[in-house]
Length: 528
Image (cartoon, rainbow, N blue to C red):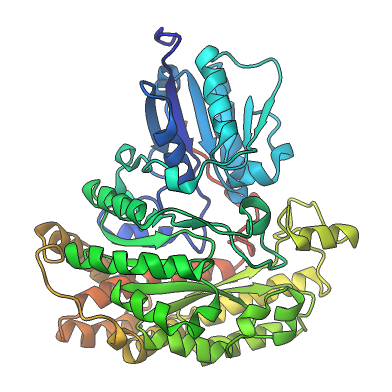
């Protein structure tokens, strides 16, 4: 039996579900690190934890790090869960375990906001962003934590202004266990790409935090033990260019004040290449990586998916422009488009060779609910609900051909020889353009030195000694080590190892061809 608590005070257990192995979560790199166990802190649930009524107790568990136990459920009065479509089996597993303890369970986040009908077993569904629905949920639980007789759906009508958001509750998590930190500056995107659900979920007019909020969050993350890098999870960092220009000088000053203790990364549309005033400030703030949803090098396909903004500058020229500011491009690529021909894979591999982008998330087209693509395919009768498929789209090309093309692209693009050659290209044309960082006390702290030496020794042992691609690795690493560029050996070694191992699994059919797929392929749930 749970401890009795005051009716006005509650104990809330926040549980974030485990991810399945994925190209973008880098779990194959974790054994090479200094104890990393998860990819990125869950921003949304951390924000909810920080918004709870004063006096309420909260316990936060990311099941990528540690599963919730019976003792955790016994402690709690109610359970909060959040997650994305790909985590659906794990989301439902948390609900099942909580109900074994007769706890009310509330689900929020992007998956339930898009598809509330997918979660019939939850007691409360929170549809939408932080706002009036959130506080109604708190009021209901404040009155009574018993499970309701039937499911209650609370939909946000009035969103809380992002300028009033509290600092996420980073103190509840071991930030040093994450591969990369995360922060949100804006929400929403002005574009309407056919396959994207962001405008429907979060709007086309980006809403913003103040620069002061962002700086306060960065300060808090450092205080809580973050090291390495921080990713701006904004749907489009330049969705509001004026706001980005206002924020960047604050980031530059913060980096100077903190000795460039971390590097930044973000997601932005490729037309950022036409904004030298933004790119120049990003270089000064030490943005090292930008994810650009290039999707396809085919202009006709870009028009068909309403992504003409990718053609505002020639794609290869745009990539070269970003490289010129020391920014490495990461790209999204989609297979299974209506415009794809039988030789679409050859075109993608040729683009990879031409662009020399090291990391590309090659992914099968998936029709997400609340997107123009989903609505169009539904009208055309081309949505397929089959758990044995990696995509819910009825492609114009044969399904097996599309999957085979994906496997072939993964296998060829991520051979050790080709991948390290692309990183070698970055060493020559991109990294020299980065800001030359001072070797201050923050970067040369004992903690950073110990962390770096631990990762270097792990990489040398697991990759340089034990791996079957060690000769390729040493061809890249030895010249760097001789010049003292240990940081480069570590960063490339970590990422490359994950990509190579994942791609081998993918090319042999052991990974899902769509990273949105919930196909049951050894889907992990938390240990009992």
